[in-house]
Image (cartoon, rainbow, N blue to C red; front, side):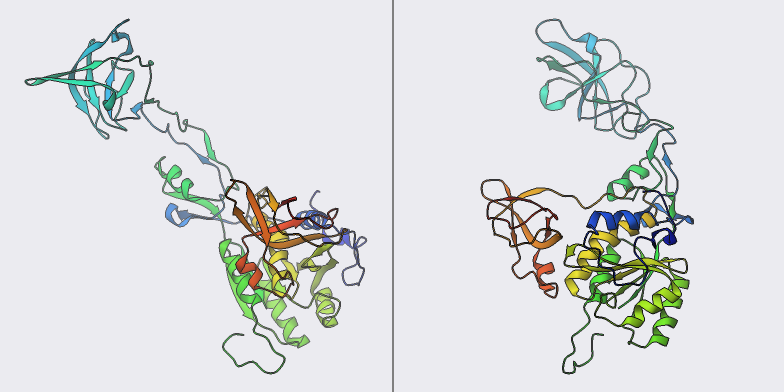
Length: 417
């Protein structure tokens, strides 16, 4: 779906009506959100050691070959393969040694070899390395020789210049998120500073430390949202729990939108909650309220407040986390500069507990994925699947994803997780 303005969708779902589109599939909602995402453009130069989890704003291009010279992949002996006898064993005189970081001056003569360490440059005159444990060393006073009694292929155990990276090659493209291995890869090219997109700035409106009154519960959503956002490496401003005061809410939302790329709220988006939240969002921007054909997490709001993207998540603790993982996570990665963020991986597993489910909606049941004694991946539910049972998210390590077309699941059936 191409990039659009939010006004183009108002004929599909009016911003603040109570239209109940049961046909609004999870994937359809993802595509709608994707159509409106505009990644950040501003970039900054940062030290390589500070770049883990950041998004590249320019290609990383190899300034030279890596490795920059032919070198040994083993501790052993380097020789010319042409010196090997056609039959039987080969005797070669050891005329020197070379270590990593030091080059041997001159050329190894015919019929000779040198002792070589891993990473050391291959000297002129040799083209093959045999591991030290595969030769017999003969000492004779101040001289030594080796005996090779087995065939070895020319070029064995030699790493060639440019074998890992060739000079001028695009090593990591724009939009790549820096991983631990990338730090070493970039460092191997002698690059110590890279250009990355600035961090995404977000506000979270959603307290602990006070005594509960009758009928109250502690607010857990701020903490789970904070944890999920922290994993993505965005800059978070927690604006706390805002009372149901229209004037205060309006002031806070305006402030959040002015200072942030993204505003996330939890609660206030379902039919039974305060209407002034919907009216306020309609006043401040273009926000679409959807009822997604999914469980948990049916109510969802998405749109723009000023220039900031807005995500209105449900109020139930599990629903907050499910909707974040299914809609917000990928959207944020895209806004951060990743052109095609990878979805959370999906794999098949044998479900060892029966599951009751109605067709017509996608369900994300909390599950525990484990490796059975027979070597197969199996999964079981965490038990109570109520959207208020947050302990199911702590106990579980996966979602059991049951699509719209799936009904009841018998024990032993293969499911997607």
